Length: 262
Image 1 (cartoon, rainbow, N blue to C red):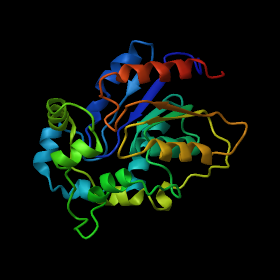
Image 2: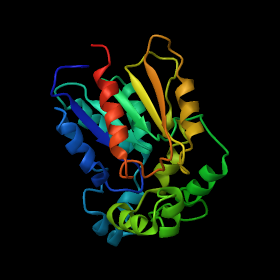
Image 3: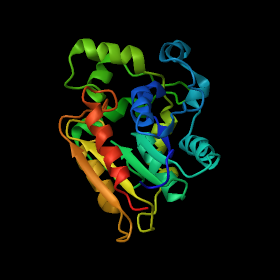
Image 4: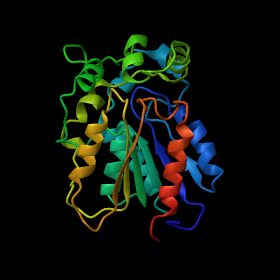
């Protein structure tokens, strides 16, 4: 084991969804002997239905990537030991940045938004991302994903009744600015620097963050003495955290953590 149990796992949610997406993951890892935290993003500590009723929410609309990173940086700094950070999408990007700042004992980035300078022109990526970027719309108003956008960007390949339940349970308004910030220097990582262990996980069916984008992210890290691992799971979409079979990924992560050098 990386450190003596109970090691704390800090889960970081991605954009557009409630932090409740980690509820089952918390139970899984607590049953393995870990402590867990899955804090909400700033201004999002409420049920998804309540947050949708607040749309357009000016507080969420004003949230920037630097604010988000500082929020989770403060949480990590106040823990008794460096946590293992597991993040999804923008949460995966945040996990990589916390690792860069030496605030994590290890990081797992699941279907991660890549750091600055890594891009793809794959059609699904452009289609899924165009609406949330909100170009030609007011950045003072939040973006709320429509059900059809949700079906394409998150839950492609799932039965419609599952897509509908997932939408009701999970979808929240989002800051257009924070999505735009992911392609700025706020998302910068020094890929040459030594770092604690990092695992990047991709899904072959993800429209929002294609597998190839995560692979490019992984290959950018060049320090030969640092652990940088990559794993693809077939038929996983962007709703990977709650997609049926999520346990397979959780088991893989737990096994990866267990095998890390002390």
